[in-house]
Image (cartoon, rainbow, N blue to C red; front, side):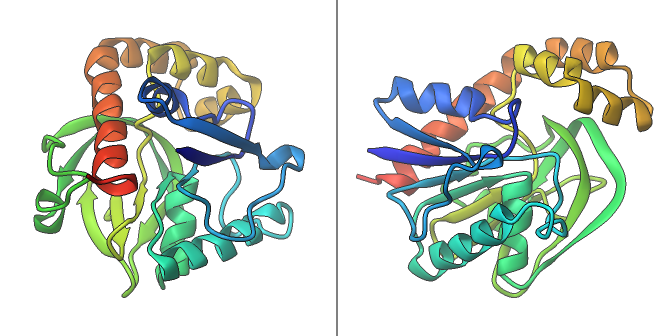
Length: 234
């Protein structure tokens, strides 16, 4: 089993999701698209689309985003196993008829609640309402007719969505643990972004340490359910 990963920046890798998939014997084909690795032309065996500092309306500056949108549209049409995280979820929302808008960022650990559809969903039915999830996004999804909303927070009307049976997007970052949050927050571009919006990196790192065990466990469990129920169900 090979999962193709589209990575959009040096700090935006598959993290704890990738670690758990490797534990389960999955091979990761990581495409550093920001460094000119190619986006697949056709849906791979399974696809993981990560977050990034760019926005969905910056396709001119980042042409790989246009290729990713084309690929995600094909994944939806084929109902092939796909999980988009943050930017990946936003791209998925657009190709399923939704929109993405800029607003005051949702940074920190937002409590995410399932919708009725989310409580019956095979990927999220083990996700506890009110789970604090790591976020650092300034873009917010409005779902279109081609997607089912599975979760939301007080700030974000869409925190998880599904198209068809096997194409998913989550706005939060289940791949992040305290160490990865620290690497992100201490990097120059993310650190400047956090400070512009009222966060000192040290404060976000301390909050991540507080939530580390539960958040890392949530990410591992999500990876297991994605693999067992969506990618390769028995």
